[in-house]
Structures are given as structure tokens and as C-alpha cells.
Image 1 (cartoon, one colour):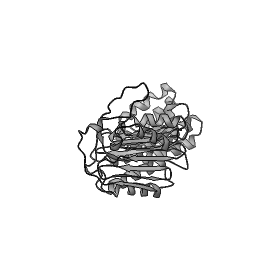
Image 2 (cartoon, one colour; image 1 turned 90 degrees about the horizontal axis):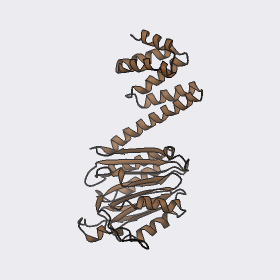
Image 3 (cartoon, rainbow, N blue to C red; image 1 turned 180 degrees about the horizontal axis):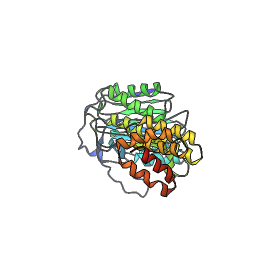
Image 4 (cartoon, helix red, strand yellow; image 1 turned 135 degrees about the vertical axis):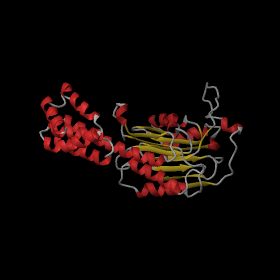
Length: 337
């Protein structure tokens, strides 16, 4: 792994050079870029096993997920931070989409940016090539580590141990799903002190190795915590719920394909992951009842109705939509009085 470390004196916000954005191209008028101090730590990575691409970030800045992380299936992932120029995200993806490797894409954008000294940017492309840049005037402690298919980067940190800890955690979590590995890297950063200002928001994005041609299917994980005193704890909770609903959705697909046994297995896994979500066991019980396993369904219905009585009324609406026979609904309601 290649490591870059900068221990610098904090710089004031009102430095004229900070306003400079990427240099204008032919026929373009030079324009300033916002001086948003989105100091943070982040990771971009490609999963060697699945080819999935991802980016994750945590910062003491509101809604960091709207600024820092960028990813596109079959193309790459970008993190743009420090005195941030968000255009590195879409421009970097555009270059990589056109076949430009991540190192060359980043080189071109940095070279054209008059504010490069206060930028911190990392990119990974669909082939796992990575590149990172930490400007000489990013606020200390700042630096990055490039590894095999990933880069971790941080600025305005409590100490220079933060980003090496991220790299170590990501490598150590090999074999887990990419989203869990990205989150492990963020948690390792926080354990070493993280952002010297504290914590406020976080985001996690994972996309497919190749585009499906249907954008709504290309984002496998897309989670954000916009404002929280414990954003990583909340992000971990959201990822758990995401896995639960992912299993539930797979159960729906199995049921639609006529595989009720597999559907029930997936619904059960979802319920185990998120026992606080009453709706998950409700649909598990509906599937049991619909497949002739009423005796197994009734205890689940009783627990659901005891938790939230509204599900009795919802059950009564299912026959009109062809989801459960009226006689079965009547039997369930009578047995659970």
C-alpha cells in the first residue's frame, strides 16, 4: 500500500485560491467553486470477488452524502472532499465511463484545478485501478493510503493513525459483502479518533459491477444519515434493515416464481434481522396461510396483532387483491380474537 501523510497548519477559509475551481476548457469562462469545508474521512473500493464498486464517508458536516460520494455501475466510484469541488464526482465518472483509467482521470482533473492544493479526491474504476490526491494545504492531519482496489483518505483528523486504520480494517474484512467492509473502515477511523470536530453525517453507496441498463436496479445499497450525534451507529442500523428488506424482497420474488418454501426461508431470515419491523412477520404469516400452513401462521399473526392491531384491518383487505382467500382470512381473524 502507498501512504501519503500531511501534518499541516490549519488554513483560514477566506483564501482567494480556495475559490478557484477546475480551469476553464476551450471556449469556457472560468468559474469559482464553492468553498464548502467538507472535511472528512472516506473510502472508495472495488470488490475483487463480485466486481461491485462502492464509496462510504463520515463527516462533521450536514448531509455529507449529497456532496462527497459518487458511484456508477460498471464505471467507478469517487470521493471528493476537503474544501470540496463536487464536480470531481460527475466529471471523474464521465472520464472513466469513456474508458479513461482512474489514475489518468484524476490526474487530468487535478491538473486543471487551480484549487488543487486544498482538494482531497480518490477514484476507483471498474477494473480496480485506484488513484488519490491530497492537496498540500488540506487541513492536518491529512493523508491517504492506496491499496489493492481501494483508497482511504482523510483530512482534519484527530491524528495521523486514522486512515491507516481504515486500510487495515478494509483488508481484514475480506470475504464480507462490500457494504459491510466499507462500514468497517469507517468504524475503524472513528475508533482512532476520526474527525477532530466530531461527527454528524454519513453515507454508503454500492453499485453493480456492470450496469443492467435499468438504473433503479444498479444501486445495490444507497444509505444516508444526514444529521445524527452517532451517524455510524445509525448507518450500521440502516444497513441491517437494508439486509432485512433485501431478504424480504427476494422472498417476494421467490413467491412470484412459485417457490413458497424458499420464500418462507427468506421471510424468516428477514424477520430475524429486523425483529422490530412488524410488517415482515405479517407477510411471512400470510405466505404460510396461503400455502396451507395455517397452524404455523396463527402464532405469528397473534404476535403481529398484539404489537399493532392495524394489521387485522390490512389482512381483511387482501382477498380483494387476490392475495389470500376470504375463508382463510375469516379463519385467521376468528382464531386470533
